[in-house]
Amino acid sequence: MVGQVWLGVACRLTTWEMALRAGTGAATYVESFIQHWLQSLLYYSAPDWFFIVVYTVFGGLVLASWFVCGAALASTEHRWIVSWQNPLS
Image 1: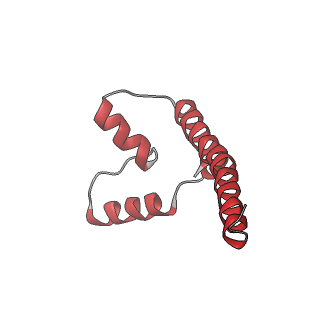
Image 2 (image 1 turned 30 degrees about the horizontal axis):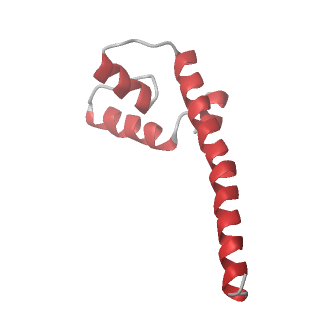
């Protein structure tokens, strides 16, 4: 998702949705799916850069959580395996 936003590429599901809407004569929109519905829910028109920043921060948090939680889980798993193999320690 972050890569698509930075490259300016629309999500395949959004493209498909727009084609289906156009095929039925329903109204379409030009922004991304998330941007459209957030704007509709919040009644706030945010510029594209805002959503780029939000997606980037969220992607960074996900990446950071993989490093932090992954290391913690690997450490915990290693201790469990060692204690299971040597019950006296």
